[in-house]
Image (cartoon, rainbow, N blue to C red; front, side, top):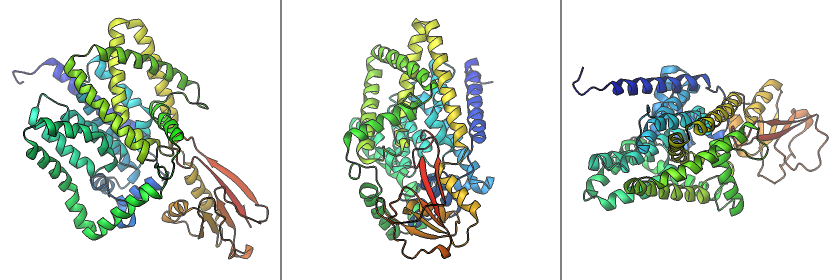
Length: 478
């Protein structure tokens, strides 16, 4: 046994092993075995046939995530399990680096509470089973923050942080605004700017050079220009296509507080009220605890707060906060760290009251999260439609839908004659005849003069599981 070994080291090791095991087992149990939306479909297809030019996945290609996913897919022969394992690893690493950023150990009261809050968080858990890189990117972003804001390790820690920023660009480009101010702060303070910039460039080259080799420079550039223009002008959700600032702000708060933290929102179940009460108390305690921090810690906190504001502005103006709550993901660990400080302050001064608040908050969060996770295992509305259409066994069916729904159905092998329609525009049904086979109209389309449908159905899933296409109407004509 080493001379400097301490009994607490073994406790920390055991705690980390138990945490890693809990992440793996829980995420495997909650794995999903269906494609829940078009975003997930692109990443599932990428594990089988990686092709950025064919949007498998879309630019920038997320090469690091897809490379690890491909290895796990070949090993496990299941993309559902591959994504669940990556989600478990991302959850564990997110806890580890959040604790590092907070400056506490897993075995400390504050560390244990932060770990529990992160582990049980509803949106973090749901995203750990989604076929997407958002949670892994959040973990890497928090890891980069923990090194960039580390004044103890000096140049070495900052270089590691810059390297992680470069790698993050190959995992999820849209997370980079969170690191903008910390990177500028590190470069402004350090006399070794060239070395730190070199670490950043190295992190980028690790994924960019293989991506160019696989895709081709011209093809990659064309895909990047096409995707960038589409993101801001065509696909919906940014300020250009959804300019109502009040609506954007409302959905941003809903994504952060209701989807992200499990708080109450009109129409939600009663346990969310318990979560809301606990969160408000912990937030108030966090504000009091922060004022008692040392000057050095408050400076670092100020940097993190400024970074969070920059990222919040980025997603408010340029991400789809109206229809996709997952964009708030990188803000959740920072909020949860603050709640951990608040919980620690409560325990120090009001143990009995703190225990009651924590039991209610953790219990309420556990109820909300397990309910959502259980619902997540059931097909989403669009997946239900796919199952329904497959069960019809119709000869020569025609399907009216928007292009994204068409892509979702067609990419999963559904055979039909598809009639595309732009939102709000009537489809061209002049070529359809009853003798051709049944006509299925997906969505609330304006059809003009048509016979009465032989069947009308509405497929639904809980929007707090996935906001995309939570309710879809379908009509069948013969």
